Amino acid sequence: MSETLDLLKDLISRASVTPEDAGCQDLLTQRLETIGFKAEQLDFNDTKNLWLKRGQEKPLFVFLGHTDVVPTGPLERWDSPPFEPTIRDGHLYGRGAADMKGGIACFVTAVERFIAQYPEHHGTLAMMITSDEEGPATNGVVKVVEVLEQRNEKIDWCLVGEPSSDKKIADVIRVGRRGSLCAKLQVKGIQGHVAYPEIASNPIHSFAPALKALTDEVWDKGNDFFPPTSLQVSNINSGTGAENIIPGELELQFNLRFCTELDEASIKQRVHAIFDQFDFDYNINWRLSGNPFLTEGGALIEATHAAIKKITGYDTLDDTGGGTSDGRFIAPTGAEVIELGPLNESIHKLNENVGLEDLEILSKIYEQILIELLVTKD
Image 1 (cartoon, rainbow, N blue to C red):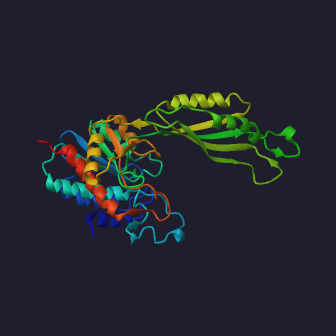
Image 2 (cartoon, rainbow, N blue to C red):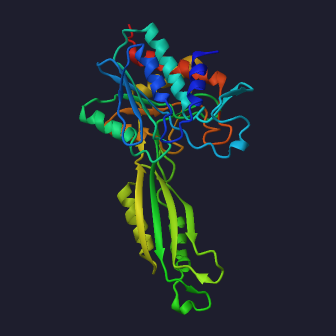
Image 3 (cartoon, helix red, strand yellow):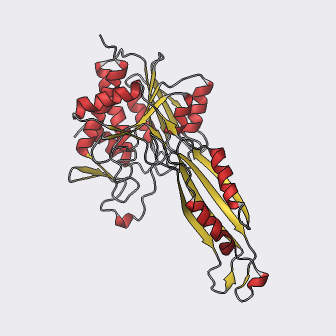
């Protein structure tokens, strides 16, 4: 059994549902301190954050990951217990196998082999691991980055081990992500009897034209790197459940995944302009989950393409699709940021899994990226 598989099984067996870490970071510390990493725990509130670093010289290369996982969903619908790693048909099953304990296991074994071969490598190696990526992400990487910025510890290259691959391992790397802006809207009305609408005010009726205008809006056409901005309504609630009561309020949540053609301020301005065309009373609360970011070329992307080609024999695709990641907190510091990890087909699903062969290939790719970047070429 491989070192990567052994480590991943140990990590999966720890039920680290956000924001719990369940001892995963202690395991990583024990393992990496033996090869020269210095560990620093940067915890905030209920979130555990681990900063592991080997070396002091520039450039600084960081593997970024998270030990927390999403809830399992109905246990009875799993083919095997989600926190009992199980091998079937060439795959390892368990919550977090792909998102993203698989990436972390590959980080660690790649680094172990790299340091064994190149103990005097160029630059500095580090890992940043949080237990708050799948949750609100308010006490995780964003806080660690603040600490590093205060200390002027500048990251040059950051590889996020999120599951980026599509049809086969390493066929896609994420070189950027769209921004995410969330909104909670409350439309006020006056509750009353359905037989007396003249003395009530139905917020569903008053908001309906504005909802159509909001969802019909063309926000932008995207650009060479990003698809057009998308707005989606995720929740809408109103009424008491009774058939003879006009509701007194309506609550709605929506999200915009926006590209670099827009920013937070312009989106808010346009939403309010749409709403103000119609006659209804509302309050709206906004939450910016992250701004869009993009790494346009650079040494990290070049090294990753070269490493994938050498290990797999095929070329990879640069892409900016998918959701957000903790890379959004690293990119504003000026670092080159990419995401490369296992297949994303099973993430957040029942029977989450990762291919055994994929683990070995991914670990070798990570190792080769380090060779490309941190070994001085003659």
